[in-house]
Length: 309
Image (cartoon, rainbow, N blue to C red; front, side):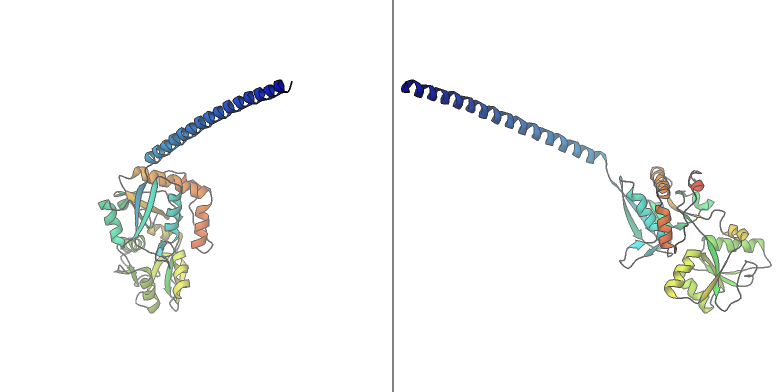
């Protein structure tokens, strides 16, 4: 009996051992198959990722700015360009993943020369619209609505119209919208001429000349006046320009980015991004940040009216 019992126990043990061995072999085989499947999936995913990266090629876009005027464009304490125009453009490219933005500060005439030569794809300088420039460049949708004021010395008789400025001196850059307005006034009013001194000086120098009496008056953007008086403490004053005379400066009071004529695809993507930034409140937020709490973002109907050119 004991021998049969031992034999039975040994037989049972052998069967169990045999079954365990088969189970371990099957488990090992399954694990190996699973590992191979995972490796194959990883290879496929890696290949798909590589293909996607290759499909979405990031193109570098170079934007050029003259570095002024503040608060639209200026160089910050970190030696990097900033200001409303610049920060809006950065926000635009944050939502266009297929482009990488580089911004270069150069002298103002070189912005146009670089666009013409293909060295830059975007000009950033609070550009107003005019027909002559539109014949050479594409305009984006507007991202800012500009306002203008007369600027004059603190002790000077206030200037409230261009008629008040007859016989006085004005300093401005050739081809700039405010200088064009004075030229147009002189054409229309030969007996009430305003004396123009053409200059390439920046806004700081122009305001210094108004303060020290070298120049009688100037015309600048309202937020610019506030920014420069706050920063430099100029002893000057301002007054609003009558609406009919504002139209001499520009029928269109908006600011735009300009691009070479062959950059229609890029321009269209910028336009869509500007609309999105208006809709989500980014333009309003940046405007209030740089313009002392004032919202100068374009009206919805202007953005929805279509392209300027």
